[in-house]
Image (cartoon, rainbow, N blue to C red; front, side, top):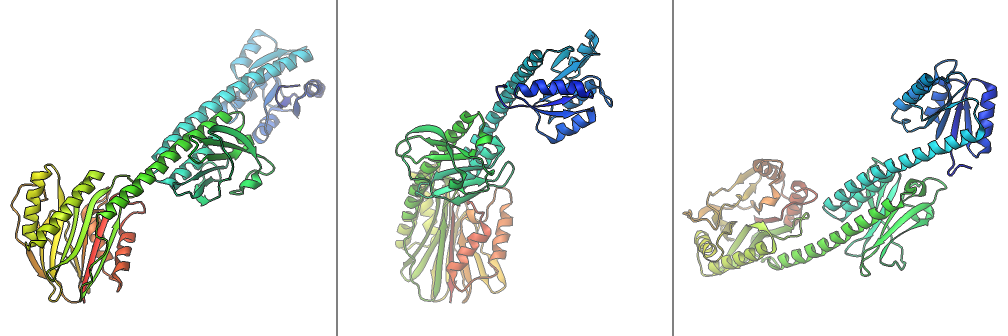
Length: 514
């Protein structure tokens, strides 16, 4: 019996000789198919799963040499072993030509049954070992690519999609990856097959005692009805748990797809488990950082007669570090102080600088200074106590009863004023905070009744692949319609102007005069 099941195609136009070859191979435990001509043989090779071809050299349509050559020239079949047999082409020249044109062995008749079977076994052993080595090498390359993609994913769902798509590519079959988020939510990355679009869906991870380490086991497909698995075939599952206090990770593929390379499946599970834990830690740190930053911002908006106020703040979704974006709204001596600013950089330190600037602005404003004088003093404070730090800010002092505004800017993007069909950026050019330079006086204007003023940070309009002027034009177009509810207006600005995964913090302040 062969060490593994194998299908042999016997090609010979002699019915008698073909009968003998088929009989010997069948008794040895091979599954045997037959063909009388070279054309028929090539047709069957293109349609059926064949492991070995026993090929007569002299055929009625084409020579066995040409058939072997054509088999080896096709990328889909060049690893298919061929044994030439002949009672006529027995010279050294014939044997040399046969081996040079693709045959792996050349038997000269009369052939003993044991010799044929032993040659078939030897050739199959070599090709199976070669095929396994090539498959393993290819899977390891794809494993490396998948590991890179998983670790480069910006968030938990994208990471599971990358893991499922990578598993489907590695094993050439449907794949599922299950993991638990930092919040304890169980998610499954699902990919129907190589090249298919992966997706993420909620799925309950099994409640079971999983020891630390990794292991592989068989699973019934009906227990994991996340996609259409191959009918009647069990699944192979790799489970990886890196620490007792961390949830396990599961990777499932069909048993036949996993094959003998279950070590690759185990390595994939371990690599994804490491990325999952890194993502969980990232999510925890990001949540702590965002909570800290939000605690540095105003907790409530003032109630001002004659004015509607709304704010939106969204932290960057693609980095752990908090940013330096901030806003301020506070009533001082019957005037509304409004500020929007941005400290350079993204780090906890940037957030602490932001907090110092916000409190400094409030302190100098409480002393009764006008906006330009406030920024001059904040600039001196920064250059003295925070040398090397840079920030932008737009500061307004608004009288609610008249709509009169005094504005001072320090390198910040201009506010947008909207009144009916009119949209106008209120511009004042001035250097950034932290730069020693002369600063202009307050810029004064009036906010008419019914008008809306929008202040914002650069995360709302700046993109890496576009000029900032394009983002400001998009803002003006988006603000052509201002909802009666300013909260909904601000929310729509973020939805329409920012990408699904925000790369920079965004602060938006909108105020409307009745």
